[in-house]
Image: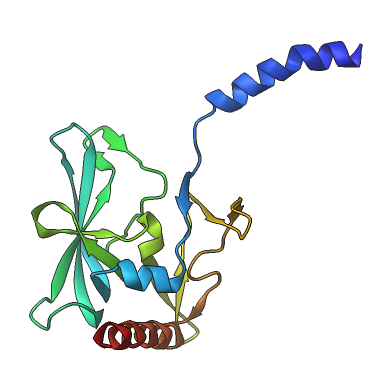
Length: 195
């Protein structure tokens, strides 16, 4: 009797699983070397403005203006602000969310790993939300963390099978220590490019 019930319920349960909405985008995990290598610029700054817009294909995007506090890689001293473009946004009563894309809050400090490729000279985050890290001050110490909201980070193991990955910053870290690691990687990559 149980086998018969299982045979009847299995297709029904499978259909429910297939029809359920996605809670995350499956994204190839990037380690810190990958983030640095794929970035045109790495900047520490504060979000001062966000504005959503409609693309030619009807989807929504959002531009986020970030005032640069520190250029870690690739920026120029003349660039005091950058525009980072993300997929999704809100215009009036219409909203679009792309799981895995980063969100920004006005006033928050962020470290962004960005590449060229957005519209109107805007930058795009590397690896979706992996390229945006939040800076907080906790008990007088600046810390940095990587949110993985809306992302399931995956990497292939030695046998070629997919497995979950913690990403470039598995746990909260002191900002100064993390920036030192990033600068070291930048210097190593610059040195190997000059050889």
